[in-house]
Length: 136
Image (tube, rainbow, N blue to C red; front, top):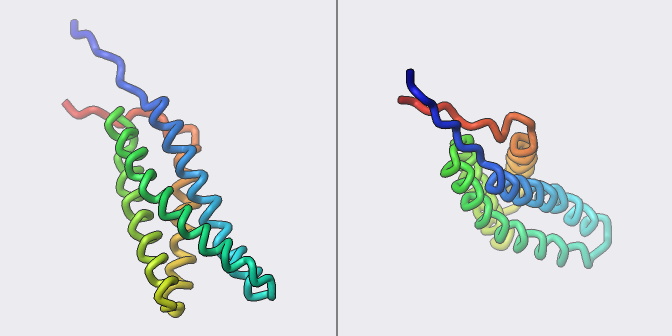
């Protein structure tokens, strides 16, 4: 008879990852709203768009770290992969925006918002905390 040790569950790390993922998604959703307000004539909204980009870049640094903690505690490995993808998208997006390459900034922005929202939804789903299978 063999005894099995219970699988480690990413509790605190998952809570942190969820918080960062949801915050990232909310800031990402705010970006097209702010720039739309700017185009509609609220010129102060450009400053909000710029500040939102800076906040997103900061959150993008935290996201892979939080996802790495989830993976280290036995959580879903693809959280880390998609966090790194989102990190890269956000930083490419910021560079394209600051250099005014809008023909790429806008479509990559749509992709960035989609990935951020999908990652946040995946993070808050009930099965997100289920430990990954241990191969032995």
